[in-house]
Image 1 (spheres, rainbow, N blue to C red):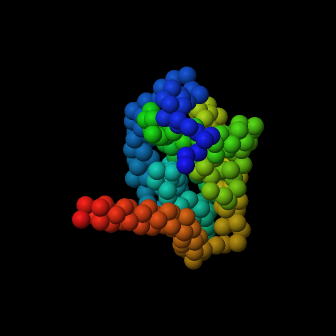
Image 2 (image 1 turned 30 degrees about the horizontal axis):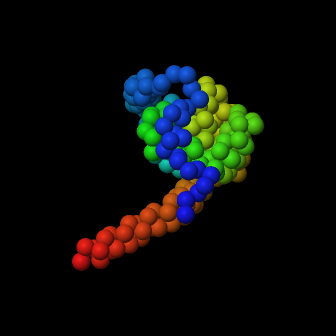
Image 3 (image 1 turned 90 degrees about the vertical axis):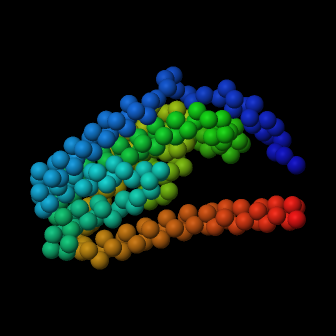
Length: 243
C-alpha cells in the first residue's frame, strides 16, 4: 500500500522549482574554475616544489576539488600542511592554512551547488522535495539556514545532508559560500594549531587519512552492497519468470 501522505509525487514535483529566480549555468562556474586551477598550477611550478607558495597551492587545489561528487578526505591535508617539516609536514602557518583551506572548501561546496541545481532540472531528482521526510528537515533547516550551515561545516558530523538541503531549498549562493567559509575556517584552524603545537608527524597524517577513508567506506559500502544484492535478486527473479 502506498504512502497516503504523497499520493502523486510526480504531479507535485512537475512544477516545483527551486526557490531561486535565475537559472544557473555550469559553464559560468566551471570554466573560471578551470582557469583558476591553471593559475594554481602555475603558482606551484613557479614557486618550486619546496616553497611555501607551492604548499599552499597544493592545499588549495586539493580542497577545492573535495566536494560531494568527489568525496576526498580533507582533515589529513590540513594537518599535513601545518605539521612541522621535521615530522614530514609542510610547516605552514596555521592561520594561513586555515584561511587558504577554508577558501578551497568553499569553492568545492559551490561545485555541489551548481551540479545539484543542474540535476534538479530533472523531475525524478525533484521528487525528493515532495516527501514528508524532506519537508520535515526543510522546516527545521529554514528556522536558521545560515547558522545551521555554518555549524554543520564546523562540527565533525556528516555535513552533506545540510549542504544539499540548503542547495535544494535555493539558498542564496553568496550566503551559502559564506556559511561554508565561516564554519570551516575555525575547524581547520583547530586542526592546524594542534598539528603545530603538538608537533604531529607523518604518522598522524597517515592515521587521520586512514581513519577518514575507513569511515567513508563504512558509510558508503553497506548501501552499495545492499543495492548490488537487490539488483542481483531482481535479475534472478526475472530469469525465473522467463524460464
